[in-house]
Image (cartoon, rainbow over all chains, first blue to last red; front, side):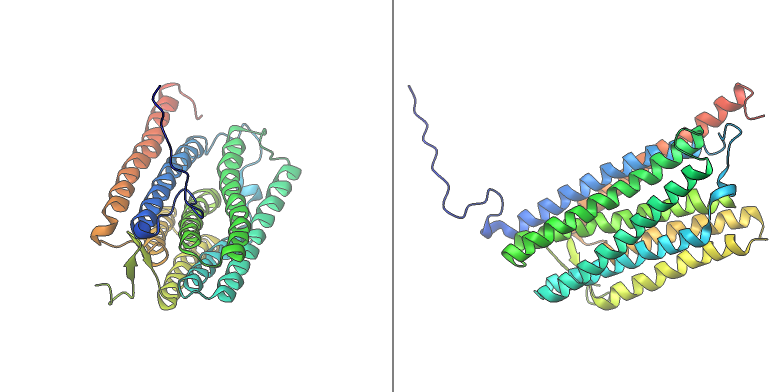
Length: 208
Length: 114
């Protein structure tokens, strides 16, 4: 029988980051995550296409003009826009190895994301209460699917932030943790880009 | 080029920003958001013009976010990021515009929409 001997990993071996090749590995991770984000773009493209096709299928029910409140959406947009900026400031803190700055800006980003999500949930509740739920018409199904998927992404990003802060507090701003933060940064800015398309196509064009 | 726009590229394509760059990004984002919102909220403008302004501001703001927040540039380290992004833009255009085009024709042929 051939006996394969697998050398046991050295203590401290984590399975991914090899110190010598750290820069290339981090680059590969980020490119891989970038490609994931590109595939997420296709997911949103199908939802936007569905929304566009069904944009006048109200089935005699409520229309966006009856319900959309642009001032409300403007505040939502401002929250997400500023959170993109504050995440950038958190990245700068991490680059300069300043843990306090990183945690402060990440905390502000988390709060802004939470505010956005709370407003979105209130809006969904309000619309459903007024008689425009996900089952009202094809239009509202497409609306909830598109805006809801974006909201779920924001929620996932916020969960990720909590996990990352635990990592940061445990290991400090290590190179592995910095790569993780860079991935989350890509994700968060991507959500902001999707929201630009949502407020332009859904809200502004909806009440135009 | 790298010193001009305050971007230092390391980590195989993941560039680092500066506070100044993020502030500029925020400034342009706010501007490109306020303009279409104001135009729709004030109202009274030509529908075609409003539509054009909304679309232009959206596309411009996507580029602002890509450049100032995601630090995309034309450095060789980012070739694959850019190539995949261009490919995805093509796919997204086919999916979105193709769906609208086909479904509009279908609606027309079925004599719906009346």
